[in-house]
Amino acid sequence: MLHEIKVSLADRSYPLFIGSNHLSSLGSELKKINFPPNIAIISNPTVDVLYGQAVFDSLVSSGYHPVRFNVADGEEYKSLPTLELIYNFLLENHFDRGCGLIALGGGVVGDMAGFAAATFLRGIPYVQIPTTLLSQVDSSVGGKTAVNHPLGKNLIGAFYQPELVLIDIDVLKTLDPREVSAGLAEVVKYGVIHDADFFKWMEDNVDKLTGRDPEALIYAIKKSCQIKSDIVAVDEREGSIRAFLNFGHTFGHAIENLSGYGQWKHGEAVAAGMVVAAKISVKQGLCSQEHVDRIRSLLQSLGLPTDPPEFSLDEYIVSMQRDKKVKQGHLTLVLNRGIGEVVLHKVDDIASVFSSIL
Image 1: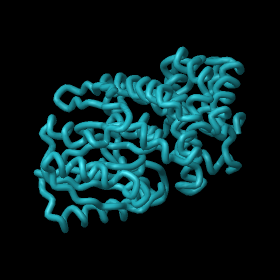
Image 2: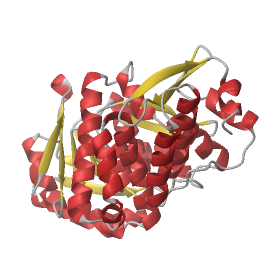
Image 3: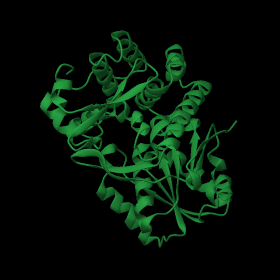
């Protein structure tokens, strides 16, 4: 069964399809939206070996003319030099404004292919086929595209919506357990920021989620994507409530930056960041220690770290001051009010807020 969620953005609205064993339907779905005939499939060697041919064959059978290009695998390659390799490939293959891209991979591939689509010839259409749980519930939805800079994560990017997102849970069968856990961190985030009942459902279904039960995965992905698409429909460019999706991310990005990209997976860093944010929420009188304990316990049961690496307070502060959410010297944190609701909290003195937590 194919489930459909719509991201409602006026003339830039697009569907998310969620199901199992439906990569072969890609070509026919692209025909329905009049996707351009010449397509570059951007992937990495690992994913391309597993699923590249199935995507390629589906496109050819529907009359498309695909070519394939692989970028190196890993967060450390989500960079401007890698982006230039994509541009070179497109130019060498005579791509023009009547062409399109497909991002076949996890968040690194999705972000880079999306940013390439946003900027090549000032914009060509693209499609997301996320192959990790993290990218299925987060980065493939909402149109955030970016590459990293040595001084910070996702500092160079653009808002650019895909034409379609195709989520096939069968691709999760080949994921390393650590990757599954990293994706579940973002699923937990949706429960904390928006839906206490969903959070409780996760507490009751840990074994099914870690065991990759198909029904549980589809439910969790659908619920996560629906929450995110509803938020994006209201606030596409993070002027207000879309910032709620950053719960745990400010500190999480600092962990990734200080550790060296790729050492901590994004979901792992966000897990530790959520616990830090929840501890700050207790200090601010927004939640109780019981809520912190529930968040920590659920994350740990899903195989995630909840304690940050031991960098100095000064190192964390310097990294957080480079965060995209810093405006005129003020850092805006997302803090949980219990479980199921969050608020934005402006911080003037970062050191004073974090010194009692770290």
